[in-house]
Image 1 (tube, rainbow, N blue to C red):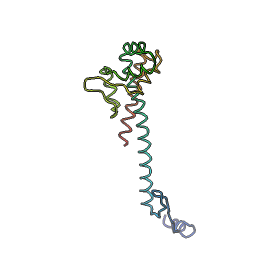
Image 2: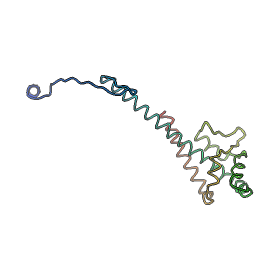
Image 3: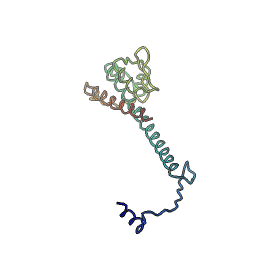
Image 4: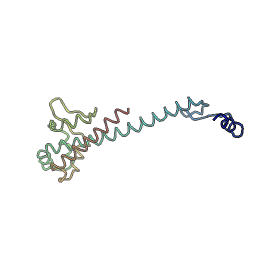
Length: 172
């Protein structure tokens, strides 16, 4: 084994040293780095990229979950919602009336707790106030989505999004 290794050293470039200048952009400035600094800078960069991407995805998931909670509340109080929309003169007044009321939300309390959105919480008395985005989503909803099946779909999608939100929070 040693004979072969010695032959390789003697007749090939296996044991050659050469100088390297490792210059990389660190925080926007060029910097001469050794291998350890280079790895540390790369890892820090990847952490920043992952954290930014995760925050972006978390916000998107929370936005979607927010709309779904509104839909779930509408489905839970469907008769009242339909009566309110029917009695409204136009979409604008329907939206305002949807947002003005305290909706009973005890049916969907578990879903609201699942997504745990700090900006939108259920009140202590078990009611929930719809935001403008939620009211708009309710007004845009087609009636066939309001069946029991629609309720299942909303619940399932919320569960999925809640799992994503938990993952994103773990990553962060």
